[in-house]
Image (tube, rainbow, N blue to C red; front, side, top):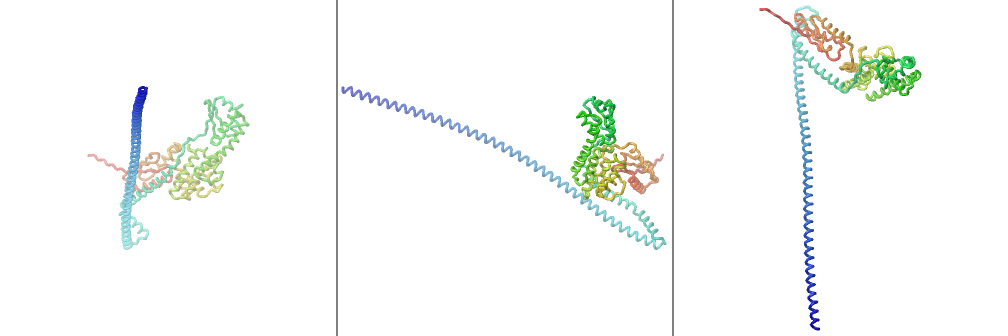
Length: 510
């Protein structure tokens, strides 16, 4: 019994020991497993952190490279801008110094010329006194005879020198004045633009189909007769497909007839009564339309103090043509050129602008009343109390009366420029030939002239003279006479260049 109990205790002890060992082993195994898991997690975390770190570094490098490239491009652009700016400044500086040097040279030349002229004047004065004393002592000549003799002596002695000096001064003066005039006119013309339209007495009306022609003619041609009686136009209906022609010398009447046909064909009510009614209606509308055109023109030119009647006349110029040039566009161009010239000359630009705009205002009524457009325009302006400077500029722009102010000269110049533009107007061939012939006859009437040729549409004249009759001094006299005579009748726009040729040839036989 005791032995059994002892064995039981021993058995229990062994089991307990075994359990303790198993528990330790299990704990050790669990520890090992946890240790490996921890290492795995730590390794994974470490790898992920390295990957994130590398990615961040790569992105940072890429961003840095992009920023660097942008900075380099910006720096390159700034360097180029600075280079161009420096180059521009260098060029301007160089040009400035060149102009300064040129002005300095001109100033020195003028000073020298002035000194030389003063010397010549002193010499002439001394010579004059000496000769006068000599003549008074040796003769009983009158004062007028002494003066004539003195002039002949001085002319013979200093003719060449004085001629050269005068030529030099004329060249310098002409160069400066031409340059200034060119600057003023070019500046004025650059701001202007005008359309060119051929002169015509007909307007074409396009139809949707030919069947409408019969409707327009009407029963026994009554519709056409109505247009003739109440509209003052002829409707020409021929074989031209889908087209009729509205004919009248009055462009406003043509426009009213055109608008009337347009409205009547829309309503399909084309009878004598409706035609008459629509003509009256469109005439009233056209007056308002002309007023609106004039108002827009004045707004564009910034003119705001003209009567309503004159504003309507300005609008009517849109339907007026002169030698193929639209009167309104021509007037706007003349107004702009006049304004620019007035600004350059320090005059009142508003007066010049209005004078240029209104210089052909008579053309708005010259096909309704008898008289030239200049006379009618002056009457209109005086009627509505337009200031005298503008009235005189309108009256004198064709040199019919004396120009009383600079504004008249300015408008005359601007009108010539606008009309003389290539393509602006169509001149009659016969008038052109007569003008060229007249220039040649003026040259041939001078003593010693053998032949004369007018070239380049009257802008160049070549004169051949007899070398046995005409010397160098006589050539200058001929040139002066030609210049004065041609000025009186000249209708050619722009400069005219006159060249005198004196050629002497001798042939001997050996």
